[in-house]
Structure formats: structure tokens, C-alpha cells
Image: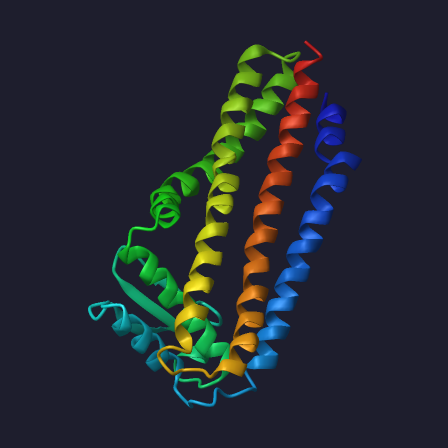
Length: 244
């Protein structure tokens, strides 16, 4: 029985499905770092620090009550829709580089989404606690149910637990899928307003887009990894169910 479990979870199918997804994820992360490093050395002609750029964009759409704060870490920039705070990392906050300004504008784009209750942002925010619970507890249910099914001669109760676990675990994929339109739309809003408020000029827009496009790839990769994990476990459970 232990041999069955071993070869089920460490088999060629896992490598075929998951390995390419992780390779894509690593490539996307590497591209983000390289693009960020490249355009961190290119200063915006406006010489406007990133936190000022964010402030200008927010004020331009009437979001004067949204605070812009510094947060520790590297590329830890984010907008918190629950507290209405836009947080910029140490390396971004005071920088006048095109990379920093583009990142700040992107986060301001999320604040703009929040203002109009952009449906996908509302859905993603609501899914945070569900995904946190589902991706953790669901994984243990999935593995536990699988082991129980194998060790008890493919018992129905084990399979049921495993399928419920997979359903919970799949919330991570749903979250990653919903994140895509949220991130792409935030970048679109940012690119459309940066020149209007005077933080970049026309020719700099293409460079800012490269920074944002590289960052967007990480979300595509995350979605692909989550999809392949769900697909792998679903195929394994279907194969196990066929042994009944």
C-alpha cells in the first residue's frame, strides 16, 4: 500500500504537469527582478518620487482620504482595500525611477478599482479568508482522504474526504484566476493616468508598461501553477476511484 501511495504522489504525471508550471513561475519571477533592476536605474523625467506620484493619481480621481504609507520589504507594495491605505516598499517610496513610479501608479489603480467597486476586486477581497482556509485545510483533507482511501481498499469515505479537500484546495486556483483581471485592469488604469497627471512623459510610457507587464506575468504563472496542481490531484483521484 505504501508503494502505491509513493508512486502516486511521486510519479511522472506530477513532473509532466507541475514542472513546466514551476519553470514558468521561476522565469516570471526572474524577469520581474531583471526588469525592475533595469528600470530602477532610469529616472523619470518629472523627478517625482513614487509616493508623490501615487498621491497625484489618487487626488486626481477624488481619493484624497486614501493614505500613502511606507512599508518594509522589497517589492512589498500593495493597496489595502479594507483600510484604504496604499503601501509602498522602502525601495519604491522615495525613488524617482520609472520602475518605482510605475509600481506606485499600479497600486493607485487598485484604489481606483476599489472606489468604483470593480467586481473582480470585490470578489478577490471577499475570497481572501476563504482561500486562506481552503488552500491550507483543504490540502490536508485531500492528502488525508487519499491515504485513507488507499489504506482501506479505496473506501468511499476516504474518496469523499479527498474530493471535498480538493474542492477546498481549488479555491487557490479560483483566487488566482480572479486576480488576473484585477491586476491587468489596475495596470491599464495606471498607464492611462500617469501622463495625464505629469509623472511621466509620452516616451516613458512604453518603459513603464514593460515593468507592469513583467509583474503581470507572475500572476499568470501563479494561476497556471494552481491549475496544474488541481488537475494533477483530480486525475489521481479519478484513477483511484476507477479501482473500486
